[in-house]
Amino acid sequence: DIWIGVFCFALGAVWQAATMDVVPEEAGARTIARLFGISALVTIPSPTIGGWLSDTYSTSSVFIYSGVLVLLSTLVLIFLPIDGKKDV
Image: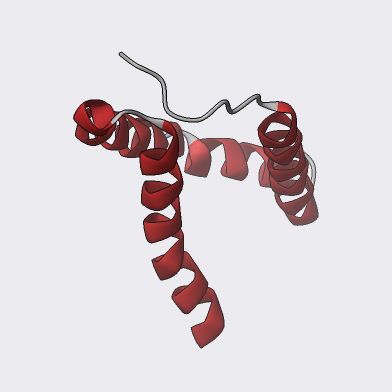
């Protein structure tokens, strides 16, 4: 579906804008690099975990696992204190 592609394309800009709002200007590039680097590293084991879940349980378990992770991430972000820009 084209709307999923549009949303995912815009998500990178949202991450960058939100990050730049809460970190000092001189740490912005370093923080963005870490954010995208960690994001890339976390996705490396995803196919293996998804395949194992699918083989061991069912294909729907992959989507349930993914949904639970999204909910947990959302809860962390909701309760994460953000006080604005800090000096590094």
